[in-house]
Image 1 (cartoon, helix red, strand yellow):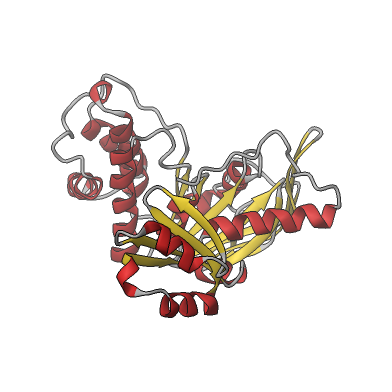
Image 2 (cartoon, one colour):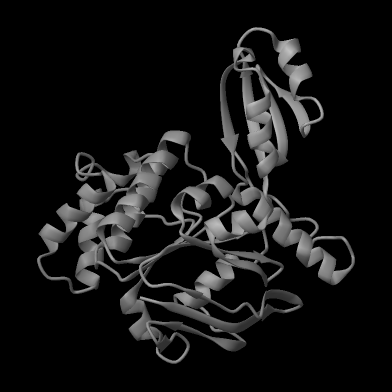
Length: 319
């Protein structure tokens, strides 16, 4: 189900939360909304699910204006906020049963069992929520969102605060949803590698403005032709260091030697270096990190002040 965002503005007092972003989210895609703290991601999601109204502009879900027909949109869109709590005394199954009854779902028990299996909580279904870990609680929230088999799933910072194992589990669930359903998944994150792994396309926001939007691969390519050649010495480290001098920006990282250069120069480098000096190597393409920082830099250049829109909130994780 396609989502269309057109020139949306939202202000809270003197704070401009959204300043006219316009972009489409393709039907059936996994779409990332990326930005610094205060970029407008959560505000956009609240407008998208009908929890608030834009000052101007329009958001459509499957051709329906969210502002004009919010009740219809909420039948199509399931929302997992960053902080979703449940009564401690209830079991996971009881929580889902309440949600299923509220939505008037048929075959509730079957839907609950299927959803518990999808998020990996079958064995913990009859345990009290008070005994759930943070990651289990997040997965229970996702199960509640998935119960009605929504055509649109909106996830606000879904892995915030999870340990590495919980993050991996959540990623696998989102990837399974992408493979096995036609749902349009929209997620926000501070973690660039997470968006790069999960998303087909991405929008980059800063200060409520749209800085860049498009397929992840295209944004990475647009950030430049530079690549990083990572060389692991076979033994003669000084010899390898000497051999790569003048072929790019050379950096020693742990036991490896990294050379950042143009794509064409990377092939010349690998051809010229004696293979006896190299135990193994890899070539790293530009990542979403480069595209993200390029997009923010372009915004700074347009303002002409050299400063981010929100100079106190520029935190983004790049594991």
